[in-house]
Amino acid sequence: MTALALVPGMLIVLGAFWAVLAFRPEFVRLDDALAALGSEAPQDPTPGAAPRGERWGAWWLRRRPVVVSAVTERALELKGRSLARHYSLKLGAAGLGFGLPLAVGVAAVALGRPTPLPLLISLLGAVVGFVLPDVALRGQGGDLTSDATESLLTFFDLVTLERLANQSATQSLHAAATLSDNTVFAHVRAALERARLEQRMPYAELKLLGQRLELPALVDLADVMRLDESGAALSGTLRARVRELRDAHLTEVKMAANRVSERMTIFMAIPSLLFGLIFLVPPILTLISR
Image (tube, rainbow, N blue to C red; front, side, top):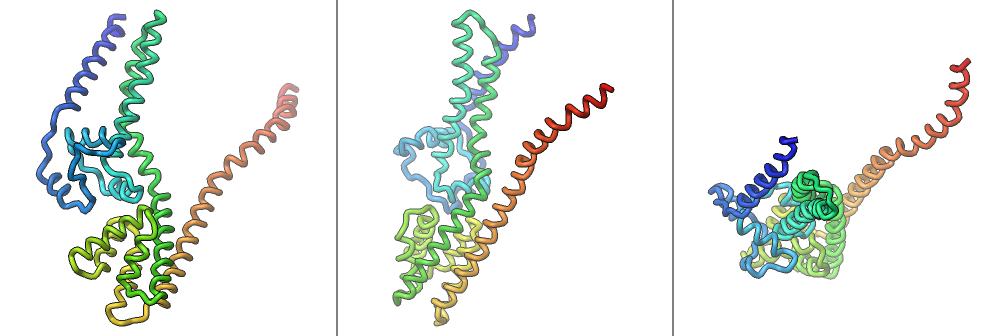
């Protein structure tokens, strides 16, 4: 009984220690700071004027600078979500996971049934809530890649139409990129704008963007559009390449659908097994009783 009474006090002390540790400023390592400076992701020049949905995350990043993994950074770019907004979601989920069990504990105390269990669950819920957005983002990796590929195929069709309208290769890319506010279109527009400001052809910038986002279709587009420098006709080559990419994407979608259908087979077989057991168990029990 004495050990059980010590548990709430230990948890309170541990929570206070974590709170102090979270609010303590953290000094960034030199290699992490250089990696952040070398990133091509746009940084907010005025973190104090962050949008409403990003204020908590911006505050957290100012207090404790973090370096995200390449997988998370790619998923955030494909989803069009900033790092500050992502950490706002993490902090919100952590606060919700901490507050709900604690509210249940307060209600239990008010009803005269105090128990240390809600406090322990609240700490666990805070940790789970903080990690849950990362897990959900990683789980959406395949869907994000598929959606980005479909957006790129639409972009290729628009580039082909602009090219058929006697636009140059560079003009076709710029005109097609301005026709949508999709995340992939926004990244392409940013890459084209960087190339324009640097006064160089945009094909290398598009290829780097495709490699960073792991979108082979964009790399292929950059390679095909580069043929314009040698005076080759692009319309036929571009349409043939888009057709090949669409066929490959359709094949991948069909394979993914087949995998989902195969996973559903076991759930389709369970009702049949249950009905079979309903009819087989009584005769078997009758034979055993004899």
